[in-house]
Length: 241
Image (cartoon, rainbow, N blue to C red; front, side):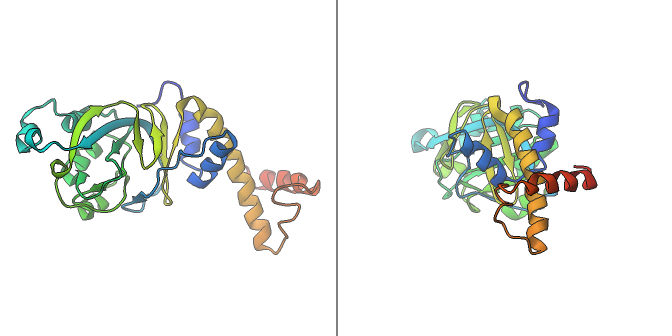
């Protein structure tokens, strides 16, 4: 699935930039709460996780109506989310920052991988984390959690606005994950932020090379020295960037 408001080229750019750079671009626009707090990747991934958000919201479980029998209903929101999350999307769980019970487990995440989902993110935890670590699908969590989600969480809504680790997540927002964590980009800003972050990454790669050779950051970062843009242009030309 490709978000209808974000060109494929922009999604490809987002695979090549860091969440740190994206957070800076968002900060320039007054957005300070788009980084999902306290989640880490379960495994190591070859490239960034990128895709539009598809959401699942949990509320505190009410014990008299949240027993194992709820899974007999094929319309149960957790099961529905797993079967309806579009290929290429990222399934984002609002687990109320509570990792005492799992948001999902290895079988459900394996099903999401088989369906072509781009990744999974919870501000709680996943059970079967060692199994999930072996999968190709990127997965982010606060920490592992063995108890079933029914212990504390009641799945209540799919594809509605949620909070995940303090970040607001609207369906269709672009979710980007790297080795440091996960950031959520409002869909209407994703194209311009992708372009800015891509350009910023090229410049910072140039700066890193210069600094590693002993150049001072003064006048280089930020580029207040008139020579810096000239040097950067030559660097880009030499490297085809």
